[in-house]
Each structure stands twice: as structure tokens, then as C-alpha cells.
Length: 219
Image (spheres, rainbow, N blue to C red):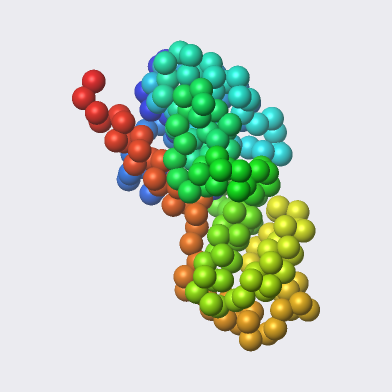
């Protein structure tokens, strides 16, 4: 049986209901080794790679994406594993979308660890906060004068020192209490409650809009 011509691998970066409201596609769980080969064999014409497994199982191999591109399949990457792979393979025709892709492409991010998180296996609800979001929101807080550079660096260092499943704002700010003034942390907590952004989610939405734009171009 032929699969849909537009296949998107997504999970914790964007909830399924929102994704389906943006783009009519076949949505599959975070990609692992072999999943892109399978999508191509089933007739995919466009593949959106947003989420993929990192450490739980074998992750998507570069040769799978190169195989898809060689077969004329358009591959869009963003947000998480997709952003990382796009930064590595855009030279060969994979298209990267979004801020996180750009950060990897420029070399400002280099590690898989920046986008890794754990999630509930049935609902894909995130259970930890990706470092890239933490880094971005601390940067915004510094720009707005909520924290200074020294406090930002201390808090970011604490976040980086934690294993990725253990990263969440409550734990990080609790650990920061011995190094950062209470008043500063209170201001930061208020900012995070009211103004923090989810960069991975925003990039996932942008990727779906890009796929829709490509798919509805008259063929």
C-alpha cells in the first residue's frame, strides 16, 4: 500500500492537533534508523524531518537522506534532528528551515545535546527542556535586562552540566540559588512564566508551512 506523498516525522516538538491543522500529511513518530528509506519506498514525494531519536535507538543515517534526495524526494529539516541533519546535508540538497537550523549551519550550535529531550512515549509530551530553548530564553532575558551576562552564563553552565533528561527550569533555577542572587532569579522566573518561547515548536510550525507552500505550487 502506498503511503501518502507527504510524510512528516514529528513528536515532542509539536502537538499532532496543531500539525494537522497546518498541513494535511501523514504524520509518523520521531524517526529512527531506516524510517526514511521506508517512506521513500512507500512513495513519499516530500519528507519533513522534524523529530528523530537520538540516544534511545539508532538515529537517522545520513545515507538515508542522501538516498531520498537521489530519488528526487524533497527533504525538509527543522527544529530538532531535522535541523541538525539539514545543517550537515544542505550542500547535497536537503532544505533547512528555522532558527535552530541556522544556528547549526553557522556553527553556533554543534552538539546533538542542544535539541535532545525525553518525552512521554504515547503522547510525545516533552518531559524535559531542550538546551537550545534554555539558551535562547536566557539570551532574551539578558537582552531585556532581566539578568546580566554573568548570571546568564552561570545558569547556562548549570543547565549544560545536567544530563539532558534532567533539564527543566525548576531544577536549573533551584541549583542556581547558590550562585545567583534571589532577586535576579525571581525576575527570571517571572519572565519564564510570562514570556518564554519554545524555539523548537516555532521552527516545526515554520517547516510545516514551508512544506505546504512547496506542495501547493502548481505541478
